[in-house]
Amino acid sequence: MSEPVRIAMWSGPRNLSTTMMRSFGARPDTACVDEPFYAAYLVASGLLHPMQDNILATQPHDGAEVAEQLLGPVPSGKSVFYQKHMTHHMDPAIPRDWMSKVTNVFLIRHPTRVLASYARKMETVNLDVIGVPQQAELFDQVCQSLGEAPPVVDSDDILADPPAILRALCRAVGIPYTDAMLSWEAGPKPEDGAWAPHWYDAVWQSTGFGEPRAHIMGLPSELMDLAEQALESHEVIAAHRLKPTPA
Image (tube, rainbow, N blue to C red; front, side, top):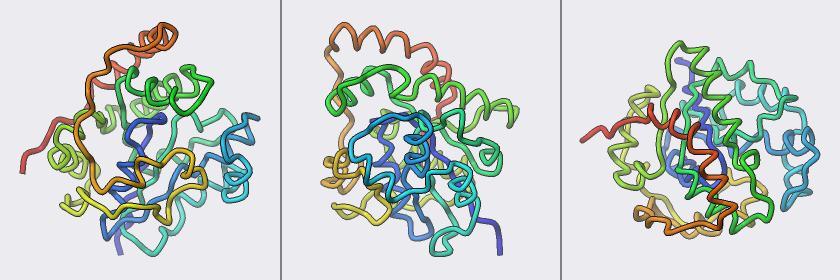
């Protein structure tokens, strides 16, 4: 029996990350896990987040234990294990050596879109909480390990042509593409994290990728300053994003 394909998808919050988990979860050969380091991150950082008690009650607090699970048996014996990760969850106290044993992919979104969306949910907004410096650091780490850039997908590219980008992504990670990835039933899913009621209202109503996002007309000055600070590292990663693969 061949080894399962373990896909670690790295993004910040509000990056189309849960929709991508829906897409992979719609594959009959795929098991998904939702932000498995969240509780370990909260314990290591000492931060307080919405639904904190629920998160701490439903996930291991030890990052090494989480990493062992990610490399262990795949739930339900599936051949693909899709792991949705937040870059800012990788606190210095959390191990990273396990990353060399999975296929790392980076999901990006223009900083203005991320900040506009995140600010509607949380009062405290800075580059660390949206994972910008951590994503740049992890991307560099994976590049150094591989000797080349890992696959990168841009959320705007996905929304513009889901089948073409998903085909390119599947080819890059070595799994077959299927149209099953384009739609799913509305509502919660078993893999959704304990924090889902706070964050996933729109995703719970979705049955597919939806339309491309409208242009953002402007941000408050403090958020625009953050977007400009984030843009350099975003563009470094975006230079490697996958191009659409036609049918």
